[in-house]
Length: 445
Image 1 (cartoon, rainbow, N blue to C red):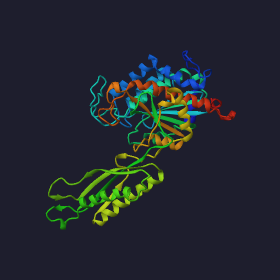
Image 2: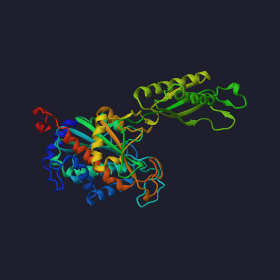
Image 3: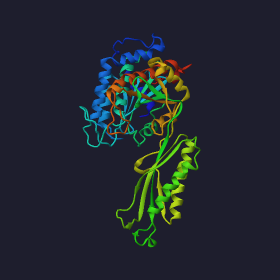
Image 4: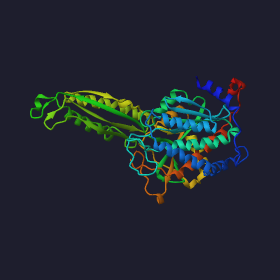
């Protein structure tokens, strides 16, 4: 079913849902600048905060890898059912897309990723991962909990929303590009803007960090098999040594950065995999090397990719070897640069400033990490920010992808309130100047 047809169907059902319970504030009557603080106060209430914590802990105990988030998705759908939010499932295998509001423009999306990492958790606590070799080491369990928290608050005000909020629960962020599959499935149809967040062990709780323009690098992976002719190490003249060829390749790849790249245009090429041979006195038939490359502009990224392949092939040839290069090893896909829309940056500063105070908004430097939120932000104006969670009284918080990664659950109130504020105020501030009667989804009912 096309997304537009699904929306028509879902809003027919929406008309028969129970009226939301009374809330302490109104989106329609309150000063728009006060909405973020109102949502923050709402998020601190036990029925929201404790609920988010409970969801996150259940998810943390049962981590699932990319495109395997079936139980995670089941839990999310159960909670959406409980609070009366319609959704479409499955999208991109395990993904979910929920809807709150009128079913009419404007449309704004808020997103959370769901997948875990293939790591053994080393943190000993009551809700430690129950699945050997898997853990939520990047905070995606927290992201889901905060998006659900925002959804619950927005659902309380669904009759006051001046448009439609799209909830995107996305699978497979960690290297498999779940965002691209959701995008290809049409989840951003009609959407005018999208917001996403990530917990951070770098910034204090109660602060947020971001920047306009490029914030995260485009990234890709490469794997090369360099083939020669094996033989006894004592008679190398009868061999074609792929280890020597691979060594020359690795050195030459570093020259791409030191001698071909503008020092003011940050790029990275790292060879992190070298496999070849199993004995001290035998030259192998082949060597496998692999690594990652990153850049902050599409042009630089594509040029770097082209040169990596060229260097590998030609340096192998100099040493009488053959080479093959694969940029899609282990189903990894290339992630574009994550670019924050300039207008949405100003909007974010306004909303977050009203909630947290301007002194708690940090402008960060771009990071060489990557995010598949970039696929969404390429398709429509997007904005990605970091949510501080550091509290020195609670010990050290390790960075993501560490076996010792921990979440400060006190940050949930800020994340959920920012999601809700960014979405609801965007709708209020971006009303269509005119709506054609034929363009309304309600006319299709």
